[in-house]
Amino acid sequence: MKLRKAEPNEVELCYQCIEDARAYHKSLGFEQWRPDYPTRQTILEDIAHNVGYAFVNEHGVIGYCCIIIGDEPAYHKIEGAWKTDRPYAVVHRLAFNRKIRSGGLSKEAVNLIKELCLSNHISAIRVDTQDENKVMQHILVREGFEYCGLIQFGGGPKLAYEWDD
Image 1 (cartoon, helix red, strand yellow):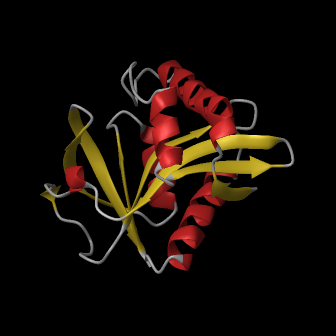
Image 2: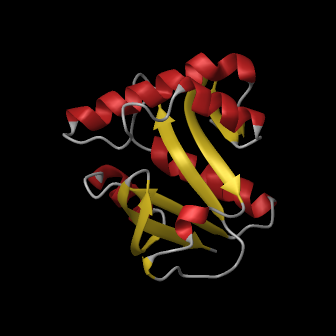
């Protein structure tokens, strides 16, 4: 698997990953994202701003995420404390196609994100997730992220995690 910038002609494939993740979350009994967010337009905007990334393998696009290297205003206020005050990257909208979801995929994806950030001289990564998203919390802790506190994002409280090299 590789991680690269998503292309405008891949919006539907990337959005399908979002929809598949939405269905997966629903099967677990929660909503990670509001029904009206993220949309195809969100992905188009990510791509236009050079922050939309596709996970690809020999079958094509199998996953999507937004990686912002720089400031996230929603992260300025935290009930708790971030691990570092160094420059950081933020990962949003991490999603995979339902046909490819399997053991080891999340580990490989997080490692690719870390490699991309480190290659851009960024050694801290912040992520937020729903309290109900126990799968993502497990992945984050397993991959070296630490719980830092609560932030307000997308209309409600989110658990905030940070990894730093």
